[in-house]
Image 1: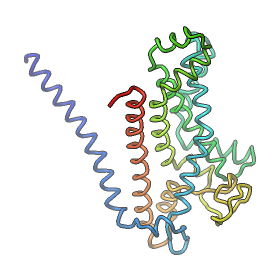
Image 2: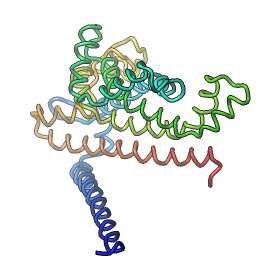
Image 3: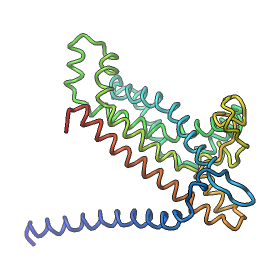
Image 4: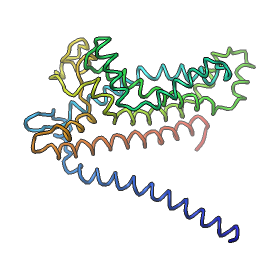
Length: 295
């Protein structure tokens, strides 16, 4: 067999394998959307759930978005600090660098159910936060931190060394070079990673069952006092998310419409995850073109 024929066969096999992956993804998406979209309506999105009649997913959808925002507020500064240290300051042969990298590897390999049990023991019980938005956000931070730290480090390392040398040559300190030269240039990659990790966090269920809880208190949408448990901004109220609601409907649902509500909620969840992924690609490309003066 000559080299050209071998190359064509290998190329065909690779195309076939890629096509299989795309086909599997397309089948899953189409199946979930076809099954769920007929049950999605404006009332479904804006009506609170009801244990007797089913209702909609308004509170669960809000809780998912709110938990995501709180998680990002906690995890972005931590991941930025760790990523800058590993990329710009760390001595790759020092024991501390090895310890940080080992911690990141261990955290990234932990199953989400283990993170949830850890969060329940530490945040819910030991710290006395109870089943709450804050407990769920802290657990999701543990779950999300390794991915975001890796993304920040890789985005910073992708910046050419000559930009670092240029900053230092202008008299900037190492910290000023890292924060005023390197970090702004790495924003497109970092932002893309943040949005992608947001999609992962948005669909998480196992880590939240034991931390954010499986129930919702009645919410007064006119009460914006974050210290009140009836306020939508309260960090100390239990908050069942969309993914947890889907899990509960399929395992504990007793109402006749549980299957339809679960299908509709699944379709909404997959649409949000798709929007996160497509939005990451779009914003990343736009920012890259803007910063590099591309057309």
